[in-house]
Image (cartoon, rainbow, N blue to C red; front, side):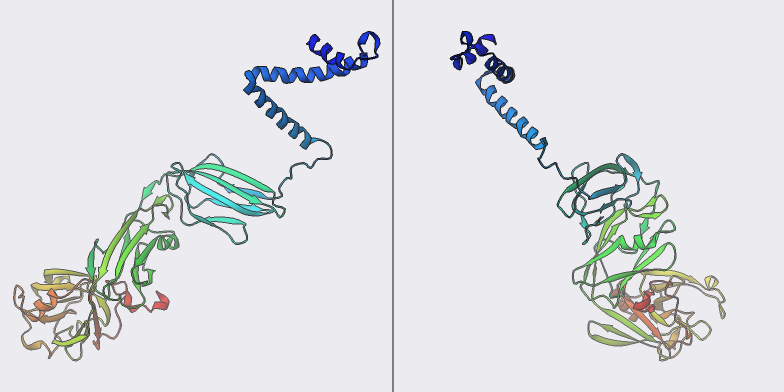
Length: 425
């Protein structure tokens, strides 16, 4: 160090006492100390390459010092603030509890992802004040949130949070009346029954959607706390391909109770609508643009058939029917094995084969509320009812009019929701 200082000092010592200027020594010592610091830094980094790194580090330090020096502009502090709920480290968070907002500025970037890195889609509001996820978060899942907002001057504020959603205390089963890849009639109504009372009906209804290949819109209607039926405004178009999409895994059906996710595809078949004129004892069957008339017998004056639009709920084949199960039954008791039975209502209205009413077909109404077509005991494939049964689908429409029972059946009785105006559905 001394030799280095004297060497530098001797360069400009001419005319000074003993060749040495004391003031120059002081200046050189100051320079030498800086040079020594640089030399030590270079030595620590090892070799000529380290010297280049040290120089860069020193330049960076000088730039930082310059930025902080008097007269330089200090970093701007943003007036924007980002808020995230739930707070960092929260657990047992409800899937719909995520809220991200900004004050004093507008959100510019929001990223929400699970531990695998899969991002949650969402939308920043037009005014930049909030971000909304496209769907509820998954239950039992850890999430990370990063959000950024900028104020009017472009200064940025950020916030982060990590949390875990709750694990459901219980699940509610949602069962319906469709089978995967089955084919149904144009009047098919999808009826969903929950195993528990539904408290959050709006959220549940939004969690069940219908994807159709021709854009047919479908809407749901609640009949009670457990039953939700779906249908379009008009009968389905023949050939429509439909997928019911259940997205209830993250929907709180009732306090602490959640659903499950699944898809159920089905297809609408040909059009078949049968109209029963109870007064004329005739049924007109319209199928794919063609129509035919069939002689029938329907409910008697004592046990009239309901008026209104019904849907074939199930094809049940031979069914045992007993008068003892019919409330308020009058007339002779019966206990019959009834062939080719197709259920129209939950309470027991059928279209079925009839082999015991003789010449009543087309002439008189003698049944206990059902619509009967000519058949033979045990059911015959070539009989009127045998052919009608073979050609029928669950979801086919049966309309009854001019029955002595003037009122229309309860829309909740079977798949009878077509009796509810679309404006009230």
